[in-house]
Length: 101
Image (cartoon, rainbow, N blue to C red):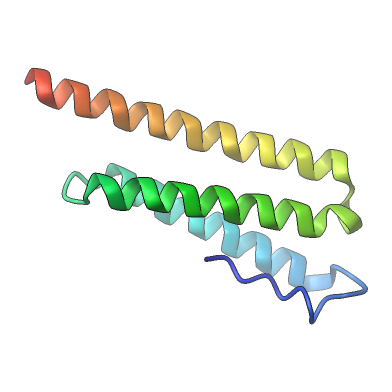
């Protein structure tokens, strides 16, 4: 789970925001790698999907005060859209595997 140092950053975003964003992108990247791994269990993929969506929501909610709510809403929307496309791709791959294509 994404660990945002909320207590440590109560007055400014500073370099911690960039570090947290880099970590968030790393989490999304790790999820996409997991999704593409045919050996990974479907349940693990779905659990990780729910976790990463929660992490994105937490990040955007926390930094909205400093970076602006419209910007964070847009970022959250864009990342959610990427995650939805990845899940759809994964579902299509499973269907193609079942059909033997």
